[in-house]
Length: 314
Image 1 (cartoon, rainbow, N blue to C red):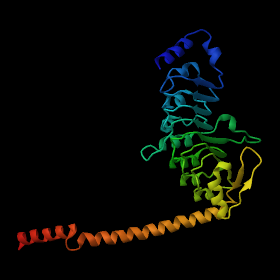
Image 2 (tube, rainbow, N blue to C red; image 1 turned 45 degrees about the horizontal axis):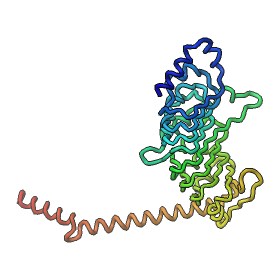
Image 3 (tube, rainbow, N blue to C red; image 1 turned 90 degrees about the vertical axis):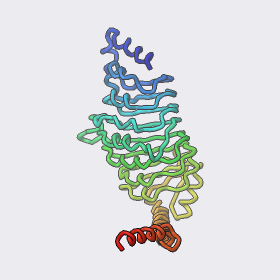
Image 4 (cartoon, rainbow, N blue to C red; image 1 turned 180 degrees about the vertical axis):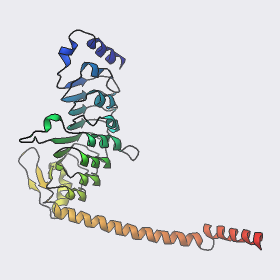
């Protein structure tokens, strides 16, 4: 990191720096050994308006200095950054940064109850669209895309992804590709009212879609490939219409075609809630009986308390 910082300091003090680096569209860092972007990079590259890409930066574990230095950044791409296990560092992104795309491939992303990217997703949701996305006649269509590919440490997407419902955009695209250990999608994905397309490919452990996906506004397109045979079979058995596609994806359908599947999933969910409530009520009754029956812990404590009160007052 010290070597990288010195490198950018040397560039900054060279002549004609302002003429060279005032209109950079994208920056690309390959095989850099820093934990986060050096804090003086923004002095040299002040007006990056495109993509910031990190390729095989194995020590990178935070995007804090990236989002705070590039105030016009529209896209972040991380490929082969195995030390990047969380997106919580995106919490430092200013609201005026017009972020449109997040792309993560072969990273060490993980989600847990202690760290589910809550603050990072909230901050991304509060970012506004860029100044070039406010056309008058006609207004430009603004798309936000979120891609996670080949992150094999990720077992489930965090529920905090539902915060993207507040994103200032016209449409949301989610692309999930080749995450071999990914088992499920969160129910909060149904909160994304602007979700227009979700692509799930080469994730063989995913065998169901959350029924809340049927709550999105309008019609959301769902695309799959041949490796998602389990999910496709479950949906077809539920009466959903899944058709063969002729583009990059093998099968596609939309939320309207999946309504029979979502109805079946909703019935399963509510049935499970009712059974769980009955079991909890039964367990509570049994616990009370065991606690206060003769010989139970509650019975003995009440007996001791009664004898103590009797000795003191009687």
